[in-house]
Figure 1 (cartoon, rainbow, N blue to C red):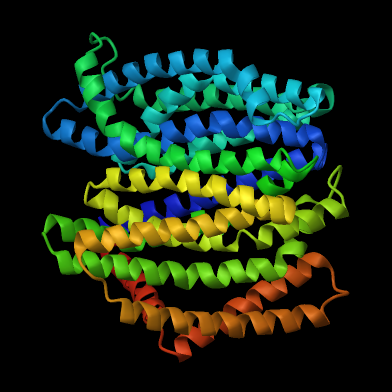
Figure 2 (cartoon, rainbow, N blue to C red):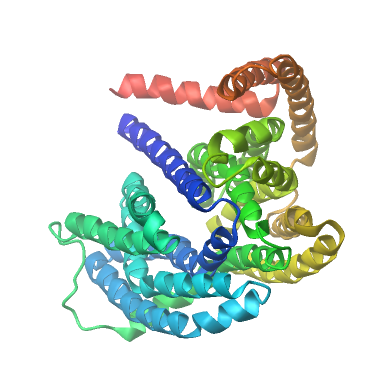
Length: 509
């Protein structure tokens, strides 16, 4: 059984990595065809608005439906509950779709008043196209949450990959004819194919009852749980939209630089966060089940130190290699050397955003485990005001470079506020041990950075891809030796956990 769980975890992590790579390829396609022109700005700005609603449904549904479905299964009404949520979401998402399409022209003009008429027209129609498939996205979100509840995590991720690959293929086929609309239409086709894929799995197994009369009381009860979680996710997207709106005032190309830099720099957060969740969070669930507050706090402490262990060297390594990475991934077609330089500069200022939000993911999981998600919502809403203030101040000072700086500073305040509230909720953590590990990891990262920087200086004439691979391998080896030599607790915990899993898997086979 344990070996099967280990295999499921590996598949989940692999599928997540594939999802992030697919998203990167999509950005590369946009960069190739549209560079840093107003066309790219218009498409990326338009995508942010409906994507806020898309992530609101996807992530909110997973956090709300999984526990409610499991409870319903224990009451022998899992199929009925799933069917009610599925149908109720279809109706609500269809209404949101119509509203979004109707107000799209007004939203674009309000949020991006400095866009040229051509950019405004593109952004408006792209927004309309994305909003047109919100009902399908809603149904997809319900079924993805169902897969997670059934521990079929990789299936929900594969279905998301289908959407991204459809957008990429559509761009390859039609970008030269219909421009950015090819990506938006490809997304619509992808959502339909993704839904067909899910229904092909769920219908033969009779996983939900569709023919039952819609019970709005049950649907309403579910959405009272769903809304706080979904709104917390939406607040994060609102903050991204705030940055995009301020970028719209910074001239052609600014929205593009912000988007590519943000997506690339935040990749380690998504990839490593999944791995750490797989290792740490079963400890939290076990602690809550056993009402063991000390074990729960140790789980949070391990999560914070382990997250810092993997994120700090990864992000610093990316910063050192950022011009090389931007050149490798984006500098081709319409995306020139000047765009590479500008995107690299933006990426440097996102360092704090990645680090603090990654650490905050651990704290948030603690809130969710305790079923105190509404507390995060209050803090998240306050972060919007801070984000607007910091964007106003820093964009006035540094131009579009002030936008990622605002995100990083806001992330610092947001994480600090969440940590303070969390500590008041569960009691003090062992901050002395956390700080000691952080100091050791920071020293190890500094040693790694010095080695990588020196290596890059002597490899200046070597092909870019060779520089990246050599520097990455060297940096990883130096960092591991350093944290091991300093007996860093987070590294020893991670190493022991992984080796234990391997040994247990071998015994269970």
